[in-house]
Amino acid sequence: LVRRRADGAVEYLGRTDRQVKIRGNRVEPGEIEAVLNGLPGVDRAAVIARDGTLTAYAVPAPDAGPVDAGSLRAALAD
Image 1: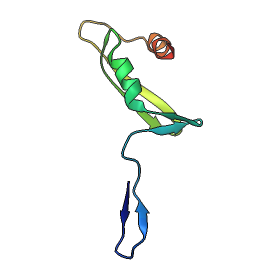
Image 2 (image 1 turned 135 degrees about the horizontal axis):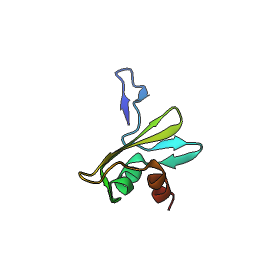
Image 3 (image 1 turned 120 degrees about the vertical axis):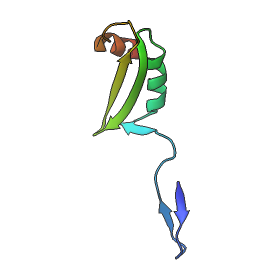
């Protein structure tokens, strides 16, 4: 997203999507959230990029018990 300033210069404001670059790969956190939200036992999920890494947060579905981080990683790897 850019805007033209009063002096005619173009100013870069940032991206309009959430796409980030992690270790040279373009990643869309929303796509990861969609996969997590579709997994059994997950009620809600959020993914953020910070300091060159991705961090996912998952809220267990009611009556599902705790969410196992290892099983979530394995499901995302598929």
